[in-house]
Image 1 (cartoon, helix red, strand yellow):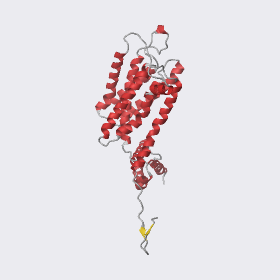
Image 2 (cartoon, rainbow, N blue to C red; image 1 turned 120 degrees about the vertical axis):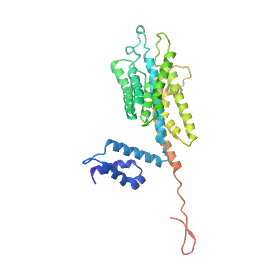
Image 3 (spheres, helix red, strand yellow; image 1 turned 90 degrees about the horizontal axis):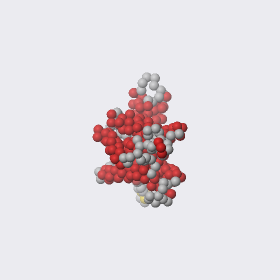
Image 4 (spheres, helix red, strand yellow; image 1 turned 60 degrees about the horizontal axis):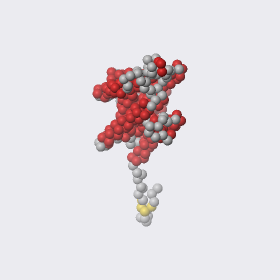
Length: 336
């Protein structure tokens, strides 16, 4: 056995055991026939193809073949939400405090967050004009900048958006990495339309004078929880409409989006943990941290739990063995 064949067989472990026994030799043989002379390692495309195929077969075996379409639906909604929020925060960044107030700012902007939000807006533009793989790269770059702004602001001693604004953006970006390869043109252009609408709305809602609007209070109590409610309503309506056609994509999309939705709702959730009522001051940072950790742990754990329950519910019952009669006396004997 060559090294290349051995490595393809190791990758084949991504498939269920029954599938490997019935089709494994055929699959590996096909890849070996297409390999270049002297090739010793599977290519990146072959590796990704085998891993995707193995995941698809395992989901089918678990009775969750509609999970992958649900992830793609969640990715479209997450990308639309992330880019719309980026447009909202970009407008806020254009209204820094006046110099005589002595409030720190990043030059003509409220904070270094302007770099992050521009990166997300560029990802929306890439989504319209380039293939999905370039959109995923643009989303990944925007996510890295979202994370990097925290140490960068500390090093430069400049303000940045608060963590309760940055964390939901990263979570939405992680889900958005599952964007489908092909989308109709209207859906590809939807983020740009949403960005324009959000920008116009915020320009009209912000005060006309030089009043400074910060991330704190305005975002925590209005924009983020309202976005979570809007996304939840859209997912529930889509899920209900699809379920009427025996399509469970909406349910899987809701499970995938639970963590971003929870992070978008950090302010009311942390307020409940802190015992605050509506209109009370901001929750303490300990309540924010504890709530964020709980959301990040519980949200992702629900997906494998649902998969396990779905697999158990779809497995056929074990047949009861039929007693065989004794060849001598004819009385039934217990089956072995």
